[in-house]
Amino acid sequence: SAVISQKPSRDICQRGTSLTIQCQVDSQVTMMFWYRQQPGQSLTLIATANQGSEATYESGFVIDKFPISRPNLTFSTLTVSNMSPEDSSIYLCSALTGGSNEQFFGPGTRLTVL
Amino acid sequence: GDSVTQMEGPVTLSEEAFLTINCTYTATGYPSLFWYVQYPGEGLQLLLKATKADDKGSNKGFEATYRKETTSFHLEKGSVQVSDSAVYFCALSDLSSGYALNFGKGTSLLVTP
Image 1 (tube, rainbow over the protein chains, first blue to last red):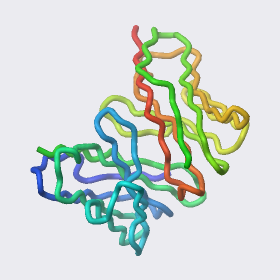
Image 2 (image 1 turned 90 degrees about the horizontal axis):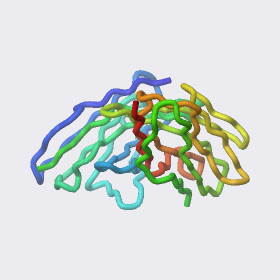
Image 3 (image 1 turned 60 degrees about the vertical axis):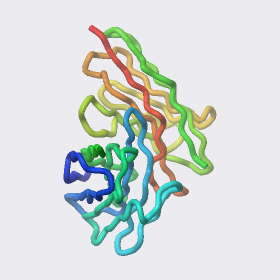
Image 4 (image 1 turned 90 degrees about the vertical axis):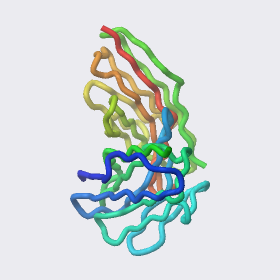
């Protein structure tokens, strides 16, 4: 299994600013993902964070808006850029360990944009 | 592409009632299937999983069987408790999605005493 922490746990931000969310895993993992959960909705995949290369984004999500880094096998960041109220969501990081098809989730970052 | 369809909620049951939450999927490959649970104010937790046809996942009294012939993975519990009140998500992953999870819309369950 893997234990995942995220920082910050929540934030309230002003329109037009950017926020970087950090995700730390307690062990080396093969794959890391970022999801968004809009209020009252299900989870939607934003992108797969690739170690040492550019993230792979899902349709509707672009690098300029959601730049992602993954400098090593245990850490990733997601930035929400030029925020608008529509970006108010919970952002979750997850990880897939080698040899397992179970994904473990971080506690999420609750973002409110005013 | 792959997709997951869950029964609409909210579902309200009395304590000790039988629970079924329907989940069906479409996939081009051979996906793994999951049920995740999100308790109020908490993060997402894996409840159970099944990786191939006819596998039964079980945990905390919940069960689900991977039915390839009906492309279903229905969640069941024989006797629900108030503490089972949560949102339940059915999900799948496979190689074509790079093992990212594709979630259903979620089903909110409220169990009353």
